[in-house]
Length: 112
Image (cartoon, rainbow, N blue to C red; front, side, top):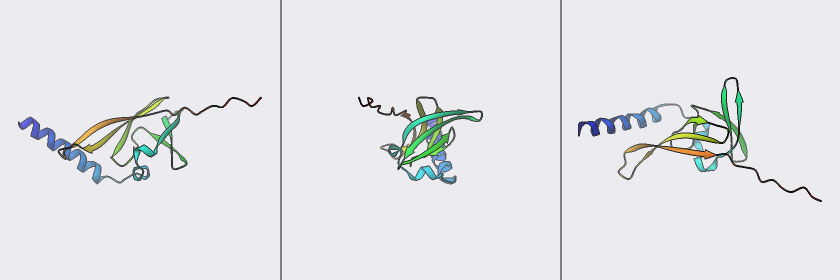
């Protein structure tokens, strides 16, 4: 029972830490408004290219996106993985993992 209480306290602290930090601009947009359009590998790391509201954004591991404290944990050539903090049915903050897949652009046949 004490272990459950400690776990609940830790989850509440996580939510409080997220609320206490300065929000990043891409946290104003809902996560479902983003599509992953590519990735770029630089000497400083891998960056995902996200599209939202007609604009392209470059994000790195550690960046925040979406309205549920979505912190980017991993970027590969084909997907971006992030951790969100949401409340479950009981109102307890819980972490969940979300993945954005690379959106393949539709290619058209050349005109003959």
